[in-house]
Length: 395
Image (cartoon, rainbow, N blue to C red):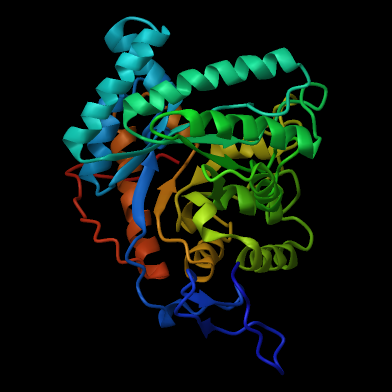
């Protein structure tokens, strides 16, 4: 467990270099001076396949993978809908045998492009069902997903926290932990072993903060079960309220500061299996009845997430979340050195315009270059610009 070194006579925690620790620096997350940090060598760029265009809009996985590699990305998160789309369009339908063929096909595509498949995601609504027959059905489906990740040549599945209604799912901590422990044990029994990363969605029914998801990880207590830290979801719960005028929670700065301090104190960096990142637009008007994104059947944060995410460092497009501060804490204070993956949902990804995937790839590369410079990441990404002309970005 990381220890914080406090300097007497100050109100903040100052830097302390601890050579033997996983953490490069212990710091007050409110005042991390990035220009004094040494470059992090091990952080590598990844992007979720969905973030380059949705398959139902006609954006093929083959093209998105090619663009990911062309613009310097070394890994991808495979969105399950892209796998199903390949099964249907290349192998005829979405039957399980054809999904396995699609997984093998995608594995070869990525091998040819020298792209690493980080994970298959998302396995939705896995845990906590009041209907225990549904829970058993999920476990059987998970067995098939284990076969899929083996065929893909990866070893990680992402579980987002369940956001079905309270009439459908339990909010009991012990129920959630036991269901996820059963999943972890299933992964331990497979060969090779499959890992799982639990991600707190900021609109989750029972688990909506990284702290709550970390308690679940500790409760599961299995070596193959860790946490996925998503900078958007962390900020989306602590900092932002898209249903409020101005888009902020009351007391958001203090809440974020306290949460990042807890992150430094509590997290075991070896249990951080993946870090995802995205910003989001500040709404001109709160997402209330009458707003174009309002949906009475879903939380405002969910509508906001699905329509308005941005890449890191796009304030000109309305980005306003403290993503830099969150990532600086995870990387330079907690000591994470691993994949950093863009996971961006947006209404624009459903645009059938054939230029959308490359537009998104260009933005993603620009974002990574900015992130690398601002957070001192020595990633070695190569800039390869397109011949496309961007008079304006479709946002």
